[in-house]
Length: 101
Image 1 (cartoon, rainbow, N blue to C red):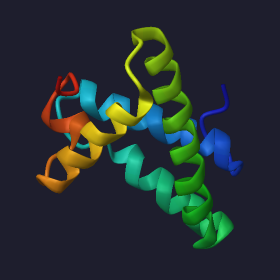
Image 2 (tube, rainbow, N blue to C red):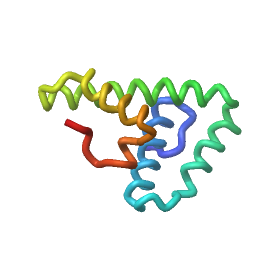
Image 3 (cartoon, rainbow, N blue to C red):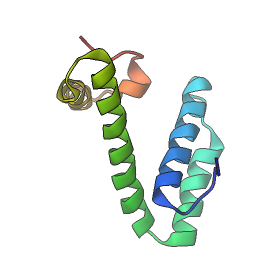
């Protein structure tokens, strides 16, 4: 897989890999994450951030749909859990390993 790409879908996947590396480093900053985002903006302009956000949401929803299918729990319930955590000022990826209930 190409790590650095200007294509939103590949850039979103690369960003997810960089965040995964950050989590594995137990929250110690991975300098490549900010550098990657900055480089994308420099090469493509600020509109790439919008495209990246849309692509990340699409990939996230596709993953939730696969998880829902595998567990038999509706994807909407996972979205509810994510929204509740966000409303409480938490990040599910950072503050807990498993979604509630």
